[in-house]
Image (cartoon, rainbow, N blue to C red; front, side, top):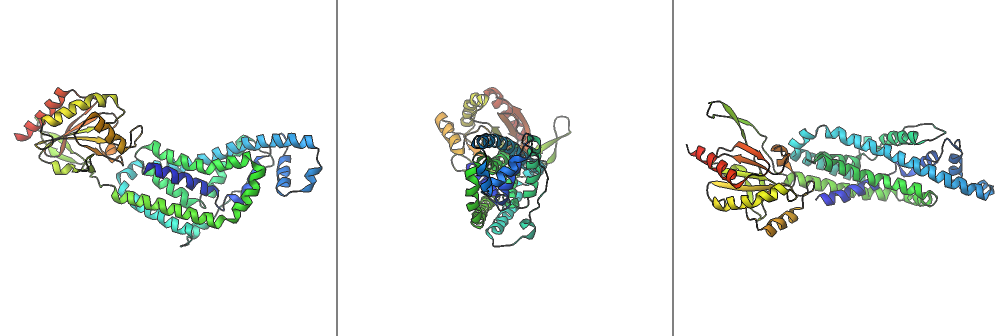
Length: 416
């Protein structure tokens, strides 16, 4: 799913560049960006003459034209780099603004995905042209007068112009921000915004590098803007559909709550283990709340984690010693496919098969449990008592004796 998202997000960036907000103004942007303090704005006139095919330019000295052309291209490319950096800053700021609410969005991710997916789908219908949304059809342009250009001004131009484009490219940008905000891993969210930004700014750099040839091509592209908008609409529809399906299929988790319990001192609070419904490598569904009345050994691990690899043979032995989950002790592993350095679901299954580990490992592809169980270290093991409360947790690899001792202690206490 993530690989499909990356491709779609990149295409959305490219199509945002090809939007009616950007393409018609490219000759003007290039003319402005090609000027510099060194030539006192002469290159603006030179570019305008070139764009307009003014015949008077042909009467200039050939050598001087060649030197000026080379110099102008260097200036144009340098300023364009700063210009697109300014654009990138805007997109990442918008992503950061949504990221401030990441904890809230993570907690209600399922509902946010359903609502967000529906919104993105609606935006796709707008782009295809089936519905009209007036405020999204407006473009606010920021006018900045400058006769001379330098990298700092180019950066500020990119920053300000991108805010002016935002209402026009809003549906595509909004779909990316919705998707990024629902990622548990902040780096994955930023990566999605980065890929969208690359799709948007790479064409700028290509146009700047080959400005002579590209401007005539862009004139032809401009004639096809309606078709490109429709294509973009269908891509947004696809993105909305994927987000909506992801939300519908995301399991609903119970927020950790406190329940009264007693320890040897007669006073304490225990935490109910967050419930989940996940599927293991055999296709079996595990619902944590179904294991009430049993002691649960819940181990969070990763294929790339050396301490996890040292610990897993012991977990396999414990699993078999306590009846292979057929008695009053349940052994469960939890893996997060495609999170960080982790393998895909299929890769994790191959790892388990290769190492001949048979204890069930459930796959949390949305990384919800990482948030609810506050996983910051691998491996981390939670011991859940028969009442469904967290008895304790351990960070780092456990010895087999320690595993056995804690399981026996919790199991025996529940019998009393």
